[in-house]
Amino acid sequence: RELAWDASGDGARRVLTRATAEPPRAPGERAGHDALQPQRRVHRSRRLWALLVDIEEAGGRVAAARAAYDRMLDLRVATAQTVVDYAALLEAHGFFEDSFRAYERGIALFGYPVAVELWGVYLRRFAARYGGAKLERARDLYEQALAACPAPYARPLFVAYGRMEEQHGLARRALRVYARATRAVGDRLEMFRFYAARTAALLGVPAVRAVYERGIAELADADALALALDFAQAERQLGEVDRARALYAYAAQLADPRVSPDAWGRWHAFEVVCGNEETFREMLRAKRVAVARFAGDAGSMAKADVARAGKRRAAEGAAAAADRGRVLAANPDEVAMEMDDGDL
Image (cartoon, rainbow, N blue to C red; front, side, top):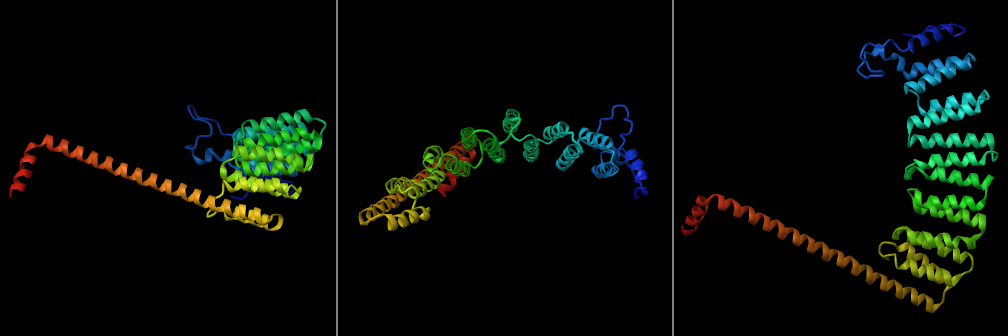
């Protein structure tokens, strides 16, 4: 049925207020139980609550709108957008600290990964309000956000934390945040690349060497290969041809020419531009060695697979023979029958 409406909206407000009022609970009845009859669960309808807060806001009744938002959070019928809208209402009317508490309630209500989005909005609004005036408090908020954040969702928070330190704190502190992130996020390779880029921007390109060296030492081979190629390109840009060649040679140890032709193509292009006949031959020699080594590794793996399969078949045969022996031992007549059949 359509909501009663008039020019002032008071009729609709009365209907919605009545509809969202929690009915008296019967003895032994659990609040919010899904088995309740529909008419006893109307007060938990998100659509009705959304209409009510819209009417309260449109009528300028801030206190009533706040009460409605709070009740939505208490009933756990609010969405993440509800939390953002509530905080925006409070901020628009000058209740800044209350708006921050609204974000915190929403974060506690939803948890991760939704909490990452709420933390992002919360921290941006906090920075817009205070800038660098409350830097220690902002740092505490970022630490709270990261304390329980799962690795796959942590990167945006680390990046925002570092950006804040760049703008209002110290460059060295920002880089320490990025260094932490390389151990705490899901995609470590991309975080190392971001860390290297920010290090170059803040301290200069030579300072990037330590970042690349740590990344190559810590990452898995595939990611270490990609980072080593980035490192070689950085050294080439600095004019350090010998260092770049050494890095390409190191990366070649991680790159199967049949699987990673791009890595060898980049070394080939480097030698064409920056090398000579001798260094080009060294590159070709290293490629032949790599082909042989990786082919040998593949052969060893294939032999190991064959050996494991043979052992598995032998074990299955032994188990089948043992089962057959137990059956014959339990049924000697069957043995005699088999012998008679043989005589025939």
